[in-house]
Length: 436
Image (cartoon, rainbow, N blue to C red; front, side, top):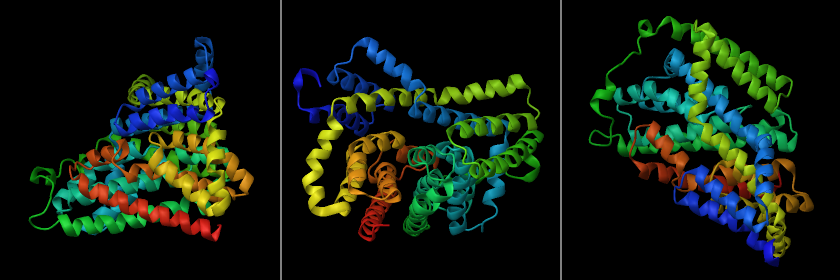
């Protein structure tokens, strides 16, 4: 720590990062500001900063950013071939064509596609066209659809075996996917999904009345949903995707494939989808580059997160944080510790959820180990603290889902977010008390 300042001041870069996040500054700029502040406080030279960024490119966080970019490539290929709307149509029409069926079908479709491609935003964008046409036709309110989009997306993100949060937790815990699913992911995502169903029904009853909030009439016009409207490229691309992604996911789970497998699997699915659609290799490459370009900033952000976390740690800030909380934790035990950790994550740290986990782990990891908190319980706390931030107050994720649902009714989405946040805080409390 420069000038012998108290180590606790090493948390200042995280405060700056969170403040900029709350002000809706672009995440990459917020991260760069955090890195610069952390480097100054840690007394790092330009050479050391450059070396740390170079290391970050090959770090776990850097590879997470690469995984997100690859997922965007796959989504772009599905969109370009026309396979995306065909797959979504087949999924959506499995459910009853009624307001309830459309809402639940939207949630399940987004969740399944998120599991398959690893990106909840890309999955929601794929579902949007078909789902909104159905919603407009059968008078499903945009207020209800916004809730369905948000909760369905997070459900798939948590359940997916090769989504960023799952890959991160499996790497940190060395659990199998089955263990993670049963002890951490499934109960968490089930609560999100059930709450989403209940709240979307509430919004539909409140805002879907005859004189309520509805999509414009022109959205109800069926634009290309008939079976005969899809091209050969779309049909063959959809077959290539389905017949590659299902066995590859199953095989990856069986061999406990980690980050390296996830990267290879997504690339393989992308190429197979393009080849099935009769695309040339040049065309496949062009589509992939287009997909990569959409999320290049995300990769750079995660490369920067590695030195960000390391510099803050080197100031001694995380150790000082543990010392401050020690009296309270010692008096209240593991339940108080878990609640403090979850609440600090939800309300005190803003930004990419994977990065939030790294920050929270730096703050609370040593204490959890010293207290003997079980691995599933501790990582449930990290998951609650990182993922529920997007429900607790309006942020990038919430606004993106609102936009994809073509809704401007933020009030219903905020109310849903508060309900989800309350449910998950109670869930964390109950698990802490029961120590499971």
